[in-house]
Length: 138
Image (cartoon, rainbow, N blue to C red):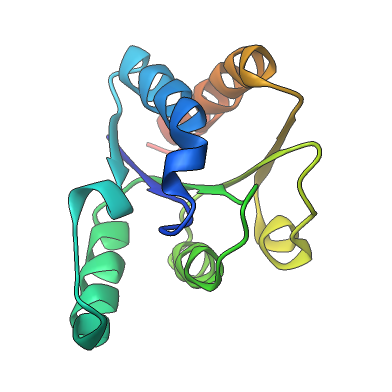
């Protein structure tokens, strides 16, 4: 299995600990994490190629985690595309970050975390639920 992690490109470094927690959690469940902004680098002139690549990567993932503590239009586009493809969507944000009504509104799961330890506690239960539902639909 593979999970697409959608996160703000501009603010990626400020979410380093959060992304580490997500990656570690996924790897414990034998799920390959894909942080698009870490795997690929594009020039501004490559916007069409960038989005085609992002959508193709989402096609090859089993679910999407949208880290919305720092809002970004790309996160909404990626989340919307994943939802249109019937992929489970996890809406994730720090409790002090502003709420994204659009991404939350299409999400299947929500994790509103107070800090790193809280995220580490909440996320495994949701990943386990996604895996359980996947097995039930086979």
